[in-house]
Length: 307
Image (cartoon, rainbow, N blue to C red; front, side, top):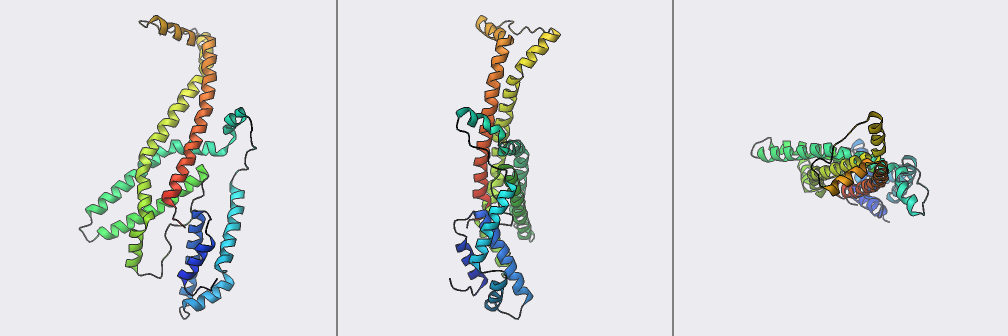
């Protein structure tokens, strides 16, 4: 591999050396490398890029060396922050009930409940920002306002990435989706922000989070409520017997329905409901974990800059 003569050459070689790695890792590595190289160039204005790079390759590392370091560090970090994998379960019952021992299940469960609040916030922020930007476009403050709004979107994408990685276990970037671009004029850096597909991908994600959040919250809360109420049926039956509660649920109902209700009010019906509730509860956990994995891939496609 030829020695890089410019910062862009160095970044291209680093990108090639990281080919096949996680896009979030590539984004972080490219951002860190460009930030370091431009800082070195700014500290030594008497040197050109080629001379500076010859010095940096000996200290910071050649592109292939840096890529190898990032790959090794990523493995160590993932081993440290991720819980140990659960032992494989071969039986159908073990796989079905084993979902309760997966930490990602509860992270996904919390994310599904939180998604309604974050979805409302992201949607409101995106719609308000776009509306004000369009309305102020005819004024001199329109472009600066739009730039500030897109900058806030970039910050929110990092925040959402941390939430997704923490709760759903999907590797997300720890650096902004845009390189520092300190060597470019201001207008070109602004133009790059407008033409970067991830800017609009992030905005689309923020708009999409409202309907997704409604679906996630509704499905999760409804299924949990139904399953837990079924599980609690024997307890309610016992409390009813203790306090001698009488319910007249069959008034005016057809005979078949009345017989069914009376059976559910019995101990055998309560136990049957409890068994169904347990099965529904674990099925809900599987569904929630699956939705979490699916949403993690949606977030990765829309929020992570491609390698």
